[in-house]
Image (cartoon, rainbow, N blue to C red; front, side, top):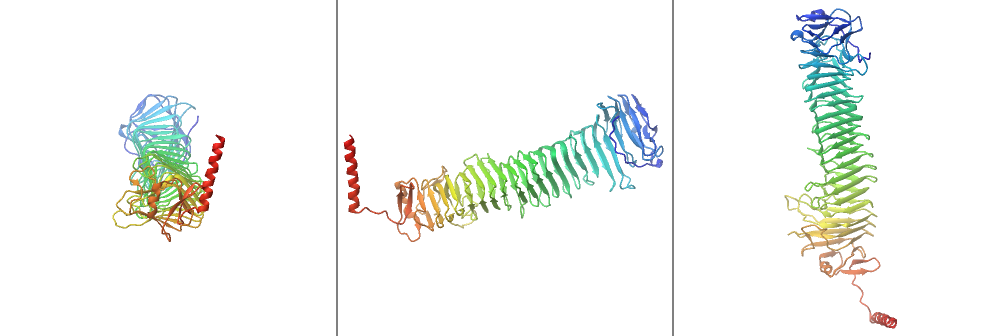
Length: 631
């Protein structure tokens, strides 16, 4: 016979017994097809031993006249535990408080007589189990074990450890099915190696939190809501938990751990209060994920772990988040703040996929080996709003795919530095404010527009192309915009910087239709080049057009063969008067047949001398003669 026992008990005194009537029970007692009105009073099976009560029938009912169905006697053995042994198919029905232990210290287990057998316990009213109210033995642990093959049907179960320093343990190797709720009071330990199912909730008592729940050995929990409070823990080691909602309430040191063989599925949301510590080495799926502000919570996704949300994910102030595994967010990931944002660290093994990202005073840092992909299908939410000093380091990857052409790709309020791989596909444009975006990588793909100082919240925008870098973005348009900060009259010129020996290839320049006189500064260092496919291009965007009469382009650091266009038209001559180059009174477009570029030049094209004209006309005559000869 296989038993599931943990033996640790003490002895109750006879004076603790109430006035109800009893049926005295010792080792070897048999329950079979009977109704017992009296309380079963356990008298043991010997000192430090384990006695057996055998359940052989299917119709045993312990009615107990309104009192507890089972109690412990002060005679018949010291530290004697009890095992209910069920025949295959046997059952017992407890009509009243069947497992109300109060101050009686003994361990109890329910097991089947044979491997593979099954039996049932029916608890017809709300039940308290493993209760311990007597603080005299502060180190004592009361244990109830539901063995493999045992199914418990109940309306609700509470596991209690009422005394400050005592502990109750509830081990489920079989199955518990509740039509209502589960509850926990004090330092109650739940070990789920079988299945625990409730139609409604699991709640940790508000005043005496501290439940410790472990799911292992392929066990499972299926509940509506799980609420954990101060000092509680939930450890999903090797098994699954299926919930509608998981939350922790304000308190101290609530701990959740999803180990590598653990799977947590939450239908609606995970909401973690301050001082909650969550570690994910396994798999977590939920609709939304939120943390609250004001406390030192920590969220860790290990290299083997994954967190998936179909909706949004929010890290608020005070949260420390470490991401080394997979993070999949169907909606927006928000790094929120009140005065400062959360501390988010992305490791070299992180693989993050998002719908959108918004940071508030928190920098995005993608280190070597890490990857973030933003797949934005929203028609209104910007793909990436950056308010931190963010960087994609060498070896890191940031890819942004924006489906709707009217949705902004990036709204950059602080600084963004690209040292690694960066791709931007689709969307309206990348807009940046004064701190700017710096491209320090040749691994950049831009299939969108660049907007300097665009949007009502940005002004004085800057793009930087780092030393020796080639920004080959013929699909990107350098767009100029209104440079008035929302709510003020402050205006600042936009700037495009190309550093030493660097080159930028763009589609063209478009000016937003505006009553403002717009100024674009193009700043060129030694050996720098800016080449446009077309001088004017709006990138296919509405409200962008050619330069108005008051608009200007100022080129600082200009040199010959530094600024050019590929597709010259006569209309491009009309813009020369609006291009300002220090020291040049007149500008020209000069064709370079070898480079296939029309360069902006301060030197007028040479007019052929008479001798040169003679040579040109002579060559034409010779060509015509050869042509006639061939005819």
